[in-house]
Image (cartoon, rainbow, N blue to C red; front, side, top):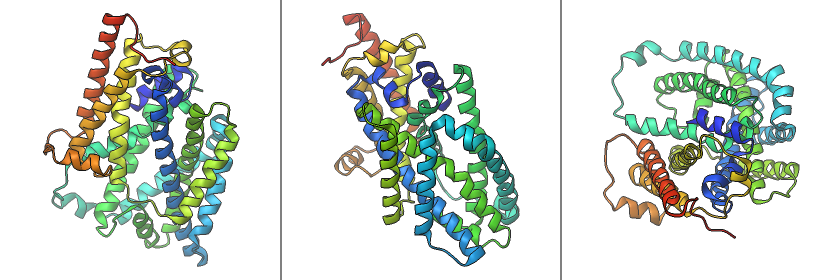
Length: 382
């Protein structure tokens, strides 16, 4: 899903939220923009908290200096500086020269460290934890799909559609296999771990080698803060196209840092499911519309889109509702309670696949109805 979204972005050469004008309409894309701004801002805050916690544990180990609030300010400033470079400048200045080598070294070291401290033999032979396989599937898909509303912000600079597809697909798949696989070993080996910051506390207690492990974790997360700050600003430009991108980036970084200083947003399972409920069906609608458009969007499909395409928005909302009904995120007050009273199914195949299939299938159907009835997309114009 992520690789295909990357390909669509490379083909259209516009940021993701601008791309959403094609299936949803110009004003319809504003709803997706608002949701993406909220999720990117939330991830920015989360990443700053995690990075600062790792840096605080590292400095406390080396110098007896904890002061997580100082590290939140430091890495808020680092995220701001990186975001101001933009994707191309960030890749040329940081990723190629430092980031890729630091991440490869951190992956190698963390793999050794986790296996050495992970009680692998005991974990392999212990029984199950009576967890839900399909809840795990939904969480993995939600975390991956949370990048779909950002991916075209970067793949619009790709040389070809093929490069965007394989670069984003394999570039996300391989590190994710490592992060989820070795992370599972670490968590299962240390039952006291109950959240992201608890992982860092556990690592910090792991002896002399924990210094390098914490350094690796700090480096590993820095690029995530950059991506979320930059994409929040780029998404806002779909609302405010005349606004200065640098001013928006600065405002987003300052806001994310301020909230990170005040809150610790680290309990996020329900947050992930809510992201899945919004963005899995949204991708289904985008994919259906793109396929019906001949696997290509012309500039006029995006920049001369109607104000609103009610059929596509309806398909998105149906997929969202089905996902919410199955997953029961309990995050939307009255709406969640209402869905809970409708006897949601237990078991099955999770929420992601049904939510995607409903939105994708309905978008294809309504798109065909539009073509047969009116000969063009059913739209509300200004």
